[in-house]
Length: 408
Image (cartoon, rainbow, N blue to C red; front, side, top):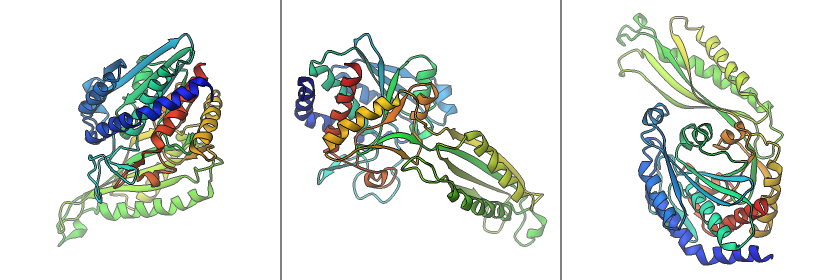
């Protein structure tokens, strides 16, 4: 290996214990979103990074904007290291996590290590890549390589609510202006494309009545049941559309939340449900958003006295590769294939991430970081989330070598 590559490898081997301890510290501080009160975690992470000799900028999002995005507090952390004149490469990971939920066999905030795996909420998605990207920068600094350009770490706290006051806010405010970016991912594939997502809230409003005389009311649940049946019938047609991107598959529709009613002996006067419509990269968000109200309104016409109301909760565009991303992909795949000991190629994933905000601002971005082969292997967003710790230094080495080549 060239001397700088050997220096990076040796540095990360020496630092393995400190890197794992750093990750454990991040896992032990809750940052559940919702409720989205992430200030304490950001301060803890900033302190840990500063103790490593890096300068951390704290960019607190205005309270009104935080509240408008359904959170309590959010501070974005930016670390910049300038090696000289040249391109700016950003590394983005998020520190907010979904709440633990039920079914855990380990403490969700314990960072317990069993058989080489660390367990805890956010250990894989994506607190691990706080550690990946911090140590990639540290290794690069220690390598002695002659570099030109800047590495920026964008450590944000609103991915679980859409990323609009994290990466998007940093870009719109002009705080960060990267030329290229790498987002949090897993170690055995370089993600170049992902799905988009539409969340809608549908409210059916009727009129309550005593269950002894239900015909004097308007049953919102009966109307909602008819609308739900129409949506389930409509989604069968989505299977006929298949993305050309490996790993994506077909569009999806899920009814994820439903609530309503007053009591067992009362005709329901209001039912609310929320749906999740996943868009493949080939789909345009505007027609997708236009389709569903037509299905809902047509079904609701069978109950003309029950009024439907549709509200958009979230619209996330799909990630499509931009010109310039192919160099990132090529370098990451080449280094990962050697270091992981097996072929690592470009793939798509059927979820959505903050990467779309960089792409929307014209910044080529791909996803790569520490973790197993799939979100299922990581138990991401479910009980006993875990990270195979051998993947952490390996992925870090891949990222550090890619940065070296980009800035060399």
